[in-house]
Length: 371
Ligand SMILES: Cc1ncc(COP(=O)(O)O)c(C=O)c1O
Image (cartoon, rainbow, N blue to C red; front, side):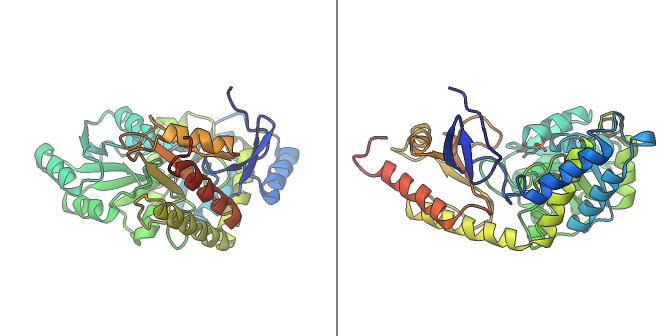
């Protein structure tokens, strides 16, 4: 039977009439259902209506977008930004906007679908390099570029299923050596990683005009829509050159107002990230003690890889029977060979919920238990 989420998203949700612990999706800071966010959406609806019914520029501008963009600049400490219809489009906006400045795109083999679509839409040649391999990327750049050509290196920042980080400092070194640029899709890291929650580059302490990221407000940041932050000069270039930005409606005003409220909370309540990190550490320590090798990256996604004797699909079903929702993934980008049990943790999960999940997994995997 297919499932319907019949409650607001949060650490407990109702699926088809049954209340469950929810360890899936991307509501990492738990902002989507906060009263302040819902109130902002309601006020906007009363004052401005649902949407402007036209694209940005000319008559499509609104104080609601101005306020959101001020929040985006404040959160990401950025000179300028673009806000557009979905995080998925960010990589297309970037690769279209940057064609002509760079000649060949190098894409990590496990990159998100939106990177592939964006890279191909640019019309530039696309070369694949082995997943997270700096050596292979260096070799492909050496073998492919002719004198004067510049590389555009594209990868997820934080991979959505494998929960690995791109080795961004090493990519930046290559970009510096070859007069190139690194573009990271940071959909799952924005709001979470780094001291300010600004994502993968913040985590590594990278502040370089040779690295750009595309973000989404739809996951940790509790709203909806795609975001690119950069210098005013770069944003102006993307704005002028990207057909997607110029010729598509922006997210509805109500969504932008909700996103502004959620971003303000993410900026002014750093304790949300602290709680999330504590929950991640508790969850990962527990899964380590159950035999999984896991790194220490404070990623809100834990990827339980296939292991001999453990059937991940059955484990997910057995957890679901016990009232705990996780995701068994086999085809999404960055799924490791053999699939994964993807466990997402939020700032709003309680320690008890995490312990219940770990105890349930231990119980299901116990020798002699029916799996
Ligand atoms: C890695 C990655 N990039 C981009 C997106 C798309 O972002 P959005 O949902 O804002 O369109 C997703 C998933 O939704 C994703 O997993």
